[in-house]
Length: 248
Image 1: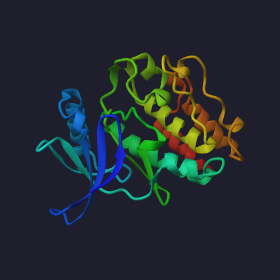
Image 2: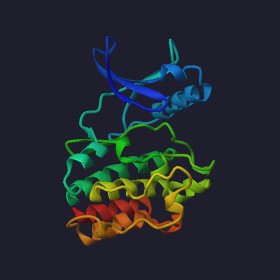
Image 3: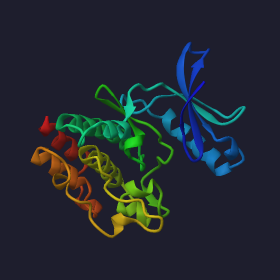
């Protein structure tokens, strides 16, 4: 068993499955969170969500189990997180890589939204790219559109409406795609992580073309449009995908 990641509430390991005769990934609660009923239910809820989904750009779940402790058994996804790719790149990813990444995320989110689900936690560490093919991982916050408590998500990547709390719809995930593409294009995060408050409620994201290298103007405009503070001014998923395809 090899540990792949350790988060605040869960650990992720690569394991060998005798039943399947292949390598798998298992997601388990931290030992010190085994008595945390909320964390337990959140992990099992992620399993129930993934059981409903079959898509080439969303990680595949094999099974959810509750004994001897709650966990998820998932496929092994090759490649690296987009966060790691950004660190390796000098000045951000190239235009074609950005467009393909965005198209794959649009495909996954279009499918997810058709299931009446929002991802709500799009960020570079939750996307894995393997030779240009992207997959969404970690659907621990996925839920139906509607009213949310304030601050559901990862602080610096939340849409303004997530940060404020209240009605949240598909536009929140469009914002998330924009935040991932902005960081992949510029090597910089859109907003700082404040200990108290949310920078995205105080200012608009800086323009991509002022922080990236030589990007096609239409691609920069498309990314910027995802980060409009008002949800109604962001493109729909289909419109965003068309804009990204035009770059190719």
